Length: 591
Image: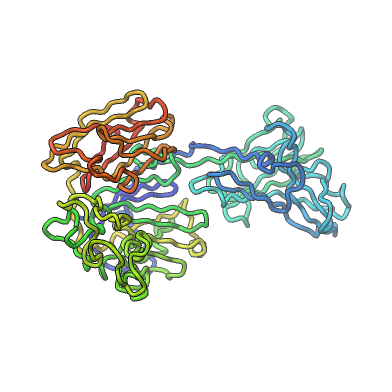
């Protein structure tokens, strides 16, 4: 069976189901539409939370700010303002421009408040305004040697938080007859005109005290220069407005949060997600839990039925494929990542050999700038469980030999609740982690706005693949109630065995405030810290450790109670939640 469902917002998320292995292709490949994932409706919103960057307020003072000044807002990233070019001017004078913060004592929105320019003719030396410390000042007022010199203010948006775009730029002090010139760039070297980017003021309220110019999608840099007008012909850059692209899919675990949308792993197939981090690296995570694979094996395999699952099934054959596809549907980079193989340099004697060892290999492109590992490698090599193996490959603690059996759970091997506290850090998710460096991406010309990052459908191999557990099992939702600060869901366990809560994914409207507690029946299964932001993922690491407090006895019902800081939104369509009882997954919100 092979299918693929992929969401493709501006920063894409893919959810995939793949069980086959087929051929390789060593050369750049054009992917036909028939072999690509069927597109789903974009689940993002370009009118999400906006941030106004008042540069004078962020500067915190009046006066010269240096040739380059970085402005930072927590959670929104940073914008770099710079002045240039430096001299010599056409008139022969040296010229050292600086960004100038003007109108610090004036109220926000005042027409004489914003970023301008000053110029020094020696270094060190006083930085002077041509007349008003503004963009387009007559710099020959400082010295005739600055004849023909017109520096600009440049803005660099590459430090903005992932998923953030520039919506508009606000100019100030553009008086009657004065002009402005704002140009956009995607690479910081070639600037082009943009709609509304140049003109002259008629002195009306359209332009005074300030006015906004929309910024084209994909803009990474702006250049603000002297305009085509007359008279004083100088003005100020007051602010820019950025907007965070927001996931609006109510089924996502981070609905209301920044892109990419994140989803509970479906079965089979897991989830494929990626993002660009603050360093510009592409970070990819492919999680196959709970099927078609997991890190349970040996006598403690969970949900593998009569076929079973051995440690050696995971070693030396399992791998997953990854690829980057440009806007022309050409595969520019393709590789396989080894899940785990024998390696004497690793503490346990086993690790992922990445893209160049074991079952890892490059299919298209070079390995430079690509690093990869796996969750099983992290389990065995003192990352998830510090001190587990010594330098001689000897396991130091634990009730089982982890090179034969995974950590013990319940007696029936029906849940992932670990019964050996010394091995509580074990990750049962079968996950591949890949990082592609910013330098590697730049060499490819990668643009997250137009390129696709996806699994290679023909290269995933699980030996063997795990059957999909029965969704819902004996657990069902019988009642949903909104009451004050609480959302209550009654769950019935109609199965023949007790069920233990092991995982909760919840998204809620931010007007509810923080999530304060989660209760199951009379027991508090989660208490602190309080969780803000409208999204929570609680595993056995966060839930109460006593499994009996997370139990619904067979044939009985219990109320799962989410307790919030404020009175809750009564519209259940604004919530999304799934719960897991071992290998059983149930969607409870919206009902």
